[in-house]
Length: 261
Image 1 (cartoon, rainbow, N blue to C red):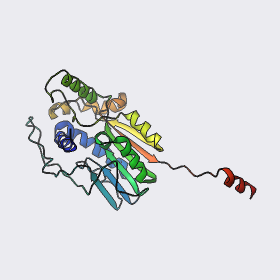
Image 2: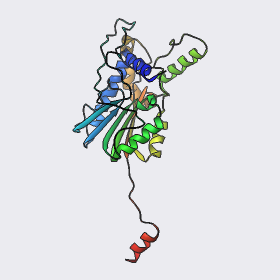
Image 3: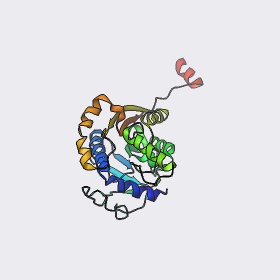
Image 4: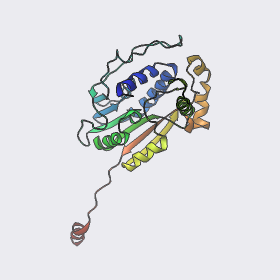
């Protein structure tokens, strides 16, 4: 699947009932996480349908996309469920670039938000290395991704299994086909290898994988209970990390000269 096809499919899915439910949770949590992040430059990679930096007060804020599709091209067709209203997806993109080759100098950005950017990136490892490169010391990275160990992830795996058995291509798939879901603990390990300190992690969206808005509302009680009793089974996770830079140490001859003085 090409990058443009992935963007079209993701934009169409975000207009469905579960897509709007997911965006609402992510928008509320990102508003809480970025409101107290201070600095001068903030960057959001991908998912321009989500205003991940709207609550932040930095003077320079950019939304980057790796797709050149316009808002009209990303407007999804009418859904089969008449209860779901469609509207053109808003896109406030200021920069088009490859996420694994960001056009920013080293240590120049104070905050980077990655809503599902690692899952859809061409090279998620290199993308995260680029984030570490452009972040200033003590800069913040906020990662949002689908949780493969959830009811949504289970249904997606069942859908891929049905496709492997020869069923209809889209039958049984609940989430967009594009991308490789990166687990919560796997993402934390990647961050630690790059010198990040994980400050906080949380899960959300515990309702079952249902396509109907009416049925999703009937299971709204699971959001209240899931946060307490089965938090790690949320359909989506968020990780907040800080880039740490260790102080320099004198070694060898320089260290001996310092002791002599």
